[in-house]
Structure formats: C-alpha cells, structure tokens
Image 1 (cartoon, rainbow, N blue to C red):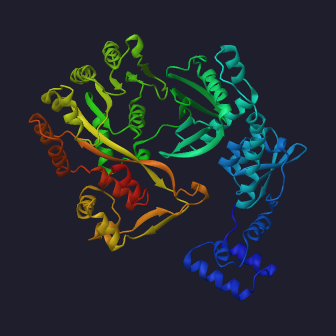
Image 2: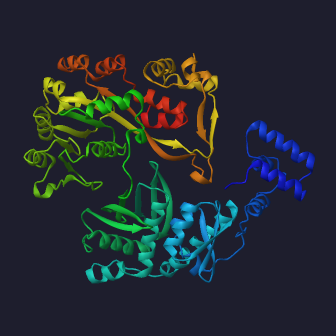
Image 3: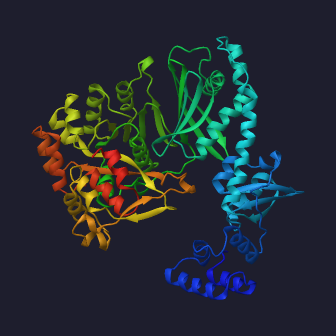
Length: 580
C-alpha cells in the first residue's frame, strides 16, 4: 500500500500544514505533470522530506523513526549483516522482547519482512524512516568495523616463513574479520574482482565494479602478511611459498547466497598481490536478451546453436564477457537428450549435467589433449574455453566436421578478424568456410542508472568534433535498415541532431557513478554463401565485414547506438569500449 496524491492532499488540508491556495495549485500542477504530489511539494520546498515521511507513516498507520542522531547498540545492529541491511535498505535499531523494530524505506515490503522474520526468529515491527536517516544509521556498521581494525593496526607483524606461525596469523580473529569484510563488501557492491595490492607503506584494496576499478580500503602494511596467509588457508595453497605464483579457489555462503572466489597470488616487489574473481554460484541463468542480444543478432545466434555441427565462436578482448555468453548458450542447450562436455581454463561455474574438465598444463592436460580425449566421450556439444594454438584449432575443425557442435573463443577485435586469425594458425581456408557457423564479437558497456537517467541532445559543436570518429549517416541508415521495433522518433529522424541521447546524473543508488550494471554490444557474423566464397578466396577482414554488413549485420558501433537511443547506455561508454 502506498500513499497516493489524493490521500496526501486530504491529510494536508485537514492538518492545515500548507496554505490551501498553495496546496491546490501544487495539486493541479502535479496532475498536469503526472508526478506525485509529495515530490512536487519537496521540489517547491513547501514541505521537508522528514515531515513528508512522518505524514506517510501517519496515513499508513506505521511508526516513524528518525535515526540520524541515534546510537544503535552494537549487538542490536549486528542482528542482521551489513550486506542484508544495505542491499534491502533496512536496519534493526531496537529489540523489544521477542520483536525487532526495523527502520525501512518501504515498510510494505512483505518479502523482506518475512525474510527477516525467518532469518532472525523474531517478530518484525516495520517503521518508516527517511533516506538520510537510514544512511546515517548504516554508517554505524563502519564505525564498529573500524574499531575492530584498530586492534591490529598497531601490531607489528614481521615477515615469517614458519608454516605454523603463518597458520596462526591466518586464524587470528582480527585478520579473519578484515578478510571477511573485504569479501562481504565486494559482494554487496556487485564487484566482479577484488585486488589486494601491497605498496611500500600500505595495502590497497580495490574492487572492479561494472568493469571499472574503484579504491575500496587502505590498510597499514603490517596486516598484508596476515591477509595473504588467510586467503592462502581458504584457498588451500602453500602458506610458506612466496616466490612463485599460486592459483586456488574457495567458496563461502553469505545470506543464503553461494559465492565462489577464484584466487590468483603473484609475487611483486612489495610482497604478494592477490586478485580474486567473484562468482555467484547461486545466480540464475541468463538469457540472450539479458546479455543484450536483440532483434536480428539474437535470431542469428539461435540459428547457429540449433545446428547439429559446426563451430560457434565468440571473440573479444579479456573481460568482454565471452565466457558468460558461452555459459548462457550452454544453459540453453543443456537438456537430458544432449551430452555436453567442456575443456576450460579455469572452470568459472559448475553446471549440473555438464561434464567440465580443467586444463592442467603441468601434467600435460592442455586444451588439445583434453579435446582429443573428449572426442572419445561421445559428446554432442563441446565447449573449448579458448582456441590458443594450431593443434587445438585443428582438432576443433575436425570435431566440427565429424558431427559435433563446437563452442569456443578467440582473442580478436572484430567478428571478421577471426577468419584471418584462424588462417594464421594454419587452418585451411576451405575448412574454415565449411565448418564455421557464426562468429560473435562483443564488448561490455555500463548501463545507465535508471534512478538518475536524463536525456539531452548533442550540440552542433559536439557532432562536428565526433564526425572524424563516427559516421553518423552510416549509423542512422544501418539502424533503420537492420533493426526491428524502432521507435517512431528514430525511424523518422533524418539527422543525428534530432535524436535524444541519455546519461546518468549520479545518485545514491549508483554511488554517483551514473551507471549500474552492464550489458553487451555485439556484431554477429553469419557465414553465408557469399561470406564462404570470400573466405575461400583468402579475403581480408575488411572485405568480409563489408559483405556481412551488406547482408544485414550490424557492426558493434551500430548495435551500441541502438542501445544508446533506447537509454540503456551512453555515447561515452560505446566510444570507450569500441575505441572509435
């Protein structure tokens, strides 16, 4: 239940909180602009946010609480974790016998109330609060954390090589708390990677969020030895080995979520650098639409994976989402009637009913030897994590020719560039033409935050500056030619000046970044008869791309603009990842 404009107006009239004439004018304007009366009153500064929330609480019959200057007991605060509190905008501020008073921005959220009741075992009394009040209260988590960090800041931890001493340090309570906090905050902020980097005098922790690195925490240098030891214990790595790189993996369960961390430890000048990839094992499978494949591109991918044999390639630089695309396709193909086997380095996610093999070069288990063995396992679909060498390429081509659907990745900048790359690995052009079904090239762009999105138009000066990098006429004509369900505005536009662009202003929901989440931009090269002919003639990549565009392929820049004009991403993001 929410307070609508009519309910608020009636209450304000009865309470005489606002002069009637001003209230009537504001109500009339709110109806014309189709906005909520309360938001308009805030905009006109006729009411404060705290007074508005108090009125909402009174109308709904829910207690109101202001926590801005309230100190919450540590034991009460920690009844629910910081992760749950921040993610759901709730905080426990008082314990009354068998009931917990919980401050919320949305006290009618039955789902989170039931979750808290089940998790804590207490009755839940929801209370309405303001955003500022909640943010101030949430800062108390950090205060208690900093107090715990203070216990070890002044401790001297000398470099030790004795395994027993190292294990003792790793099991020290403050060190465990620091590592747990780094992991929890990474999950809370939806980070994909955690970087822990030693400098001469301090330790820097950074999170990669939506593809961009952000500073997360700085700690004194003396805790680095304990952090490294703790992560080595979790990952089952050698504690007293500091000279060579080590790779490991561990899992944790936090608030009913299973999270895997893939760990890489590398010796550097100031100590050992740790990078951990964060993988949500409990995440639901993605769809092609979730990835950003739309219209003709989606149809082309579906046609390719419906083939009983051939090679389906995904290309792009490291971190462009290639593996996620392949896992999504494996999820679509994963039925009881199909035998799917993979050879990967590393295995990112474990998937039920799929036979996944890890590359181990030290013992001779390479992509090539693993793939050769897989062919004796009667597979219908094979995924090769990456085609890195001539031998793996040769076996993949042979597998595709003998009735298997092969999925794999290559490191190239465009879909068409995959063809000469395969030729460089000594693949015969006639074999490439006869076995490749489709090549997908992709990049990841950040999505504009829906809470602070705003529209604008490019000025003439901005368009003139960009003309050397972008052929706007080509982009516009390609959009009209190759995309279904175009808006009337785009289909009727004659110049780029007529079209709206979008950006994020920055708000609390996106930590003032203006972006939240990522989506892919793609080009999907379908190997048609015309393209096959060019491949057989050893055509260069630009000729292949030109032919594919003539046959309806959108280049990545065009797909990027399709997402720009629908408000999914910004011009700056598309230019950043395509290097146009």
